[in-house]
Amino acid sequence: MDTLPVSLPMLTLGVTLLCGVLAVAGVLAYASGRAQRQALVDRLTAAGQTGAGRQRRFAGVDRRLRGTRFGRRVELRLAATGLDLTPGEFVVWMAAGIGALWLIAGSFLAAFFGPVAALIGLWASFAFLNWQRNKRIEKFINQLPEISRVLANATQAGLALRTALAMAAEELEDPAGAELARVADRLALGHSLDEALGELAERLPSRELVVLVTTLVLSNRAGGTVVESLRNLTRTLEERKETRREIRTQLSQVTVTAYAVPAIGVGALLLLDRVMPGALDRMTGSFLGQAAVIVAIGLYAVGFFLVRRLSRIDV
Image (cartoon, rainbow, N blue to C red; front, side, top):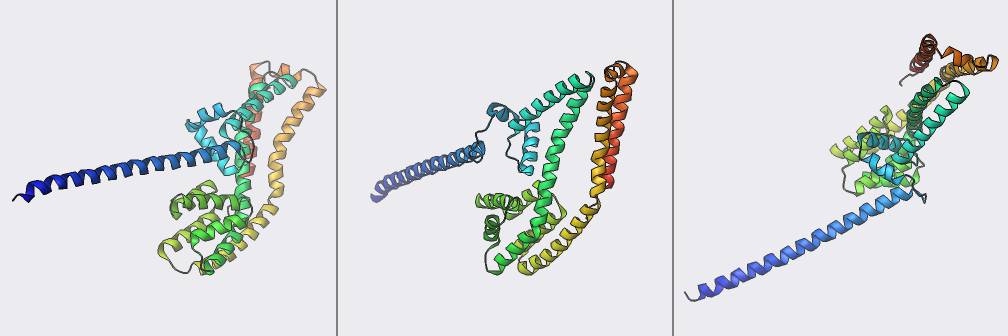
């Protein structure tokens, strides 16, 4: 009976000391984790700011833009194009280009054409991003058979799919190498294969890539013959690549026509102003003249989009 009062304080003291040790260990682990996370964020931020040794411009504008919905959309578009630009740099250069077009059109044509040229410059800026994005997607699609072949060889050699993706990122050229390197980095940070490949499919949307991503995800999730599936997919992608090349060659004349028609209209305006100096000022000095110019520009735009739409064939 005398040992109970003695053992209870000792037990209480032991439990208290153990809780204190665990609390200190938890605080140290938390502090270490926060320090490692901050070091990783600083390293990634520094890498993004320097960008292959280049000092980023307009950092203040870039920070403000990234906090807005418009800035995030521009950032996603730039990420899909592969251009070495930040959202702040793109927006500033776009604004400078729009201002220059406004001044040039207002000086050489007429004051009415200044805002029109600015709107065309705004559309052309985002059209340039879409063109770069489509160009990168097309180049990536052409590399898909090689990607599938490298992954098939790596998995046949006994490598895991994550290791095969990292190896393919090192062996292949851009854009496939850079995009697969992003996937490998996501996997290294703890993201699942479905999430990493899903982000890749969102950045570079195409039917061929969706088929490859679906094959890899299902093979990784359910197991099965990954090598045989990739071999068959390689042959299919090679055939689709040749088909796309033939269609693009046959439609090249239509594509040139779509760009030539608006260029002819701009050339006609310049020629008219040369033959009859001041004709554009007099024409746009009245409401009917301005309305006629706007209708003509609208018709040219409709013709451009119709020709481009008719020449777009999904394979």
